[in-house]
Image (tube, rainbow over all chains, first blue to last red; front, top):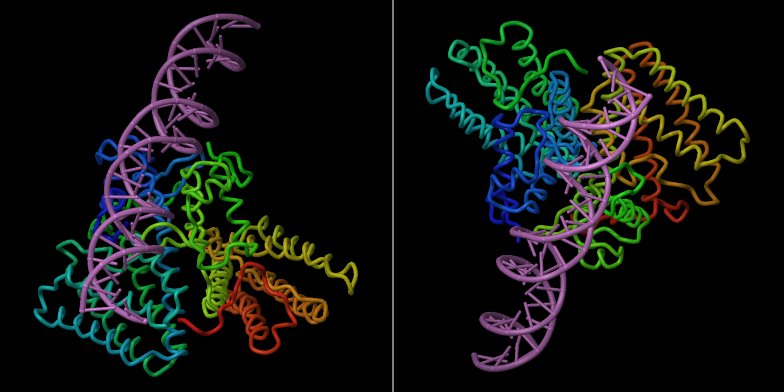
Length: 248
Length: 248
DNA sequence: TCCGCAAAATTTGTATACATGACTGCGCCA
DNA sequence: TGGCGCAGTCATGTATACAAATTTTGCGGA
């Protein structure tokens, strides 16, 4: 009955709608979601709303309240940094396993092709980078990377981590004043993509792990920089209220 | 409304009952779970059954079937090995972070106390080790380890991985003929516990990471040994049918 | 005998009514 | 005035009827 991302059932429509509202920031972290209110809003009954919330809990966007019901998971600053650290560790391991186990020609061609397309995005015009296209291709690259070791376990866990709104390196977009610096950091990342694929192809496990980990940690450092100094210079991902210190 | 593990609502009772049946092996991997059948069996309606299955999917014991419904997640041999690898990576990172960030005296005392209790289990009688008590204490040790970095993210992910029935090193118990060898491997593990705590206390991040990773990978090698040579010598965890090669 | 199609059976999806537990605020009593 | 308790409200838990979709089965024809 249930199809894929393209909503077919009511529960699926509710799922994508809720996910959109959360990642767009309309529902800040900590917000409690009431079944009746959402059901009315979406013109459906409580049952599919419940179903959708349950799936979002699986994704990690919602968490179950102690006394029943769901609330939007809120991410403190430390949580975000830790998630990026986790992403680095997992992708590093995926890269190492891929290198150790070897990768089929087809898979290698596939991920190489993605890197080539990323080159295109940069090459067209030095001044104007299509960040939308970059983000999409970058996401594809990391999906392909997760699939390289042929391990359902790692692919599964990486999918979980990647689904978090801020886990992607491209979650943080620059404002006007920082465009060139941002573009430069993307270029560095692209060079890392290239080296990473080469290391996996050469079956250099340790090097592949280090490169992948470093690649993810760059996003972490970027976020730390944004926060520590002049965070007005960069617009962050919507829907993410970064609570710096305060509560643990 | 919902309490904790101790079933209060129907959904909670169904949850613990289903989890028991899965981990006991009464429901082998790949089994599809039908709401109506379970509802009749448990003398409740479909709704709480659905709720329970949804939670089990969050835990990773069930997976959603493509056309709706749930099935018991089946773990091929490779999946099990990968999960142990994943556990090693995550615990290694947790240990490293704990060492890098430093750990409060209280937490350090707590985990040291667990190690001491583990010593007791071994010390009482060289011939007779209480595997039940060992398993419980060992679980406590790894819970405490996951909590050391003070990171909700890593604690959460480690809890996920640990909940899988075979992810624990103590999931594989020996039969009569291999008791002494098994006991010896536990002693090695205990020594690793001790070294790990020392490394974290000394804030040696790299060493702590390596030790924790090695500790988990020992379980992996143990499983590989069981499978590669004479697996009749050791009884594995119930409810886990290890499909060696065959389908990928 | 095998293939395809259609109908029936099975199973999940959805709506809804009702039950029960949690929370809030008001009032009473000390 | 402050605290305790009770009742009403609100949100979730549960049961159940019905709808939609998927799967299976059986029949007919090539």
